[in-house]
Image (cartoon, rainbow, N blue to C red; front, top):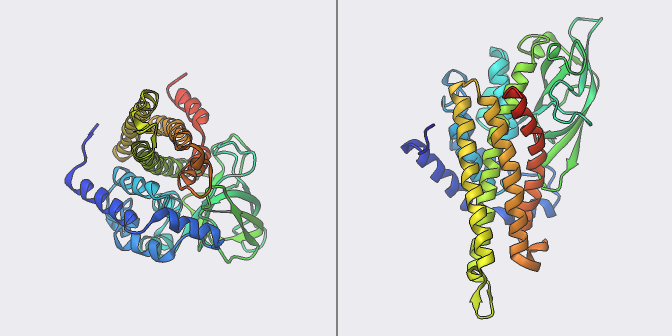
Length: 382
C-alpha cells in the first residue's frame, strides 16, 4: 500500500484544508443550526467546492469528471470533517453520484450527473427503512408493474435520507421481486423531487446536518427511470454504499484529528496549580493513546480507499475494517476531548460538543462498529 501522498494529492489536501479554514467553520454551522436554515448548508460554498473540482474527482473523464479515485476523495472529506462542513458532498456526489455513474445510461448522466458535477443539482439516495438495521436487502419501497401504460408504481417510506431535504432528485432503492434477504429483485429508480405522489419531510438530527424522510404514495416511474437493469440493483447499491462509507470514514478521520488538536491546545493553555494541565502525567498518557488510535485509523482509511481504486477482492472487508475502527476512534476521542475540557466542554457554548454530536451520527451511518466487525468476519470466512 502506498503510504505517502504524491505531489498532486499533497496539493489537493492542502487546498482543501485551506478552503475549510478560510472561514470559521463551526460558527457557520452554529448559525445555520440556530437560524433553523431549511437547506442546512450554504449553496454558495457548495458551488465553490464544485469550482475547485472536488465534485468531479470520482468520475471518469467520459462522464465529465477528473478520473481520480477514492484515495483523492478521502483527502477532501478529511478536510470537510475538520470543519464539520454541512454541504452534501458525500450524499450527492459519492453516494448517489457514483450509483448513477455505475448504472445510469447516457440520458441519466446528461440530465443528472453532469449538473451534479457542476454543483447545479443535488441528488440523494434513499435506501433505508425503519428497522432495516443496515441490511441492504431490506429496501424501503415496493415497486409493482403498472397495469396502465407500462412502467412501475412505487409505494413505501424511506427514512434518514442523507442530504434529502430540498434535493433536486432521488435515487430510490425498491423491490420489484422477491423478499427481504434476497439480493435479486432490487431495482434503482432515479426520480425528480417534484414527481406526483412523492413527499419529502425534513428530519432534524443531533448533528444539525440535513436528512429527510421520503414517502412514496403510488408514484409512477417509467422504464426510462430505471438505473441499470430491473432487479439487478443490489450490486450497484452495495458498491455505492461502500464508496460512501470510505468517504465518511475520511470525514470521521478529519473530525477526530481536529477534536484531538483542539484538546491538545487546551491542555497546553489551561493552567492549574501554576502549570499547564498537559504536564500532568495521567493526561499525557491519555493524549498519547488517542494519537496512536488516530494514526492507526488513518492507515485503515488509506488502505480501504486504495483497495476500492484498485478493484481489490478484499476491498469490502477493508471498508468494514476502516468504518469499525473510525466508529470506535472518533467516539473515543470526542468523549475524552469533552472530559479533558472539563465543565466548559459540556456546554453548547463551546465548540467541542459539535464534534461529539457529529461522531454519534457518523457512528451509526452505514453501520456501527459492531455491524462492520460482523461483516468483516463474514467476508473473511468466519
